[in-house]
Image (cartoon, rainbow, N blue to C red; front, side, top):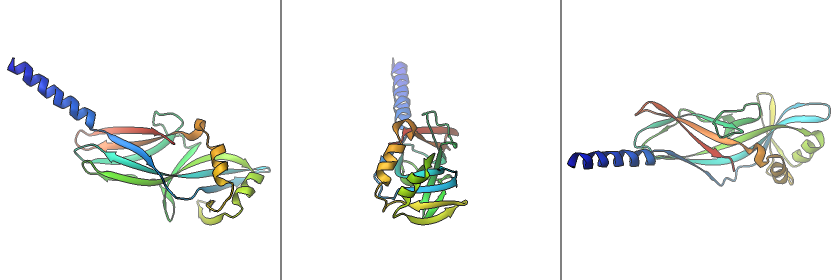
Length: 190
């Protein structure tokens, strides 16, 4: 009888530990500006990347160290990245690749400010309307980037173009040092 009680106690502890060890992702408000990246111009349209800012809080519920190895975005919640439709940047004065290799100590919380880029064609007229009152920020790999915080139509334009169908899923991949396993957490983009 004691052996059964001991086995049940150990199983309960293992189940509780497995349930509590995870990574929690959540979105927080950010006041970073909307941006647009102009790639190339056609006769009647422009290929752009609409850059929408997000602040993501990542909370490790692991009692050991884990490392962020990749951030990806795709149309489904399987964690597969779709670079044909999306880009991810971090914003440190200038757009830069997303952070990787970031270590989380036991039960640590970190916040990431990123831009998710939605690639699409827009008309020259739409581009000209968006760029009214915009501020040129930088040239990123021969693509011009503009701050749209002073644009009167940018917010409405982004809401119309970035619909639920294309918003996507953001995936964070981690490496757990204790059990040498890869972990993936996915969250629908708000």
